[in-house]
Image 1 (cartoon, rainbow over the protein chains, first blue to last red):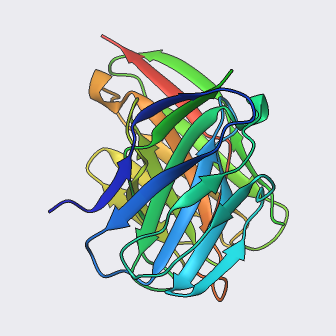
Image 2 (cartoon, rainbow over the protein chains, first blue to last red):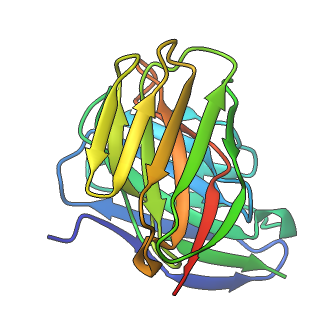
Length: 113
Length: 112
């Protein structure tokens, strides 16, 4: 049972480059999320989606874009990477709204130099 | 946006000791979850509490939800090195896609 799969696991980007962080889940969950985690800061929500074709901003959306063309996939796009985007990125999914478990991927560690 | 305050931020104890981690908010939680995260991994759910005054036990871990639903605690009895990790509380926001708002976490180190 794969759960939530993120690729790549590690990446180094130069300032101004762009990239897409991939996230796919095989649990048929409607709800998907992208978080970033900085040391001592917990996890901050970047974007979330309640179903295919529907996305919404979280707490820290600036510098990122998302799309949700299928139930399974929720890619996160970084345009014009900046050092402030150095972080660990986690994708998560859950079955429904309210009192349900969120399942997290293993994370993507991104460094922008 | 609701702010969740966790304390302490760091905790280093010896095997066999007891400890308590706190999660507080200025407003009422709709529901509160506790997660545990190991290095290099994503968070994993430990428990969800919904009802004020609720107490849940998971082996040596005891979770309490305050009567007013504005605070929660996690108590570990006889800590073991395997309990080492980052403990995160999170409020799940109903009617907003179930998104989670996290506290900053408590980093626990249990030394043998």
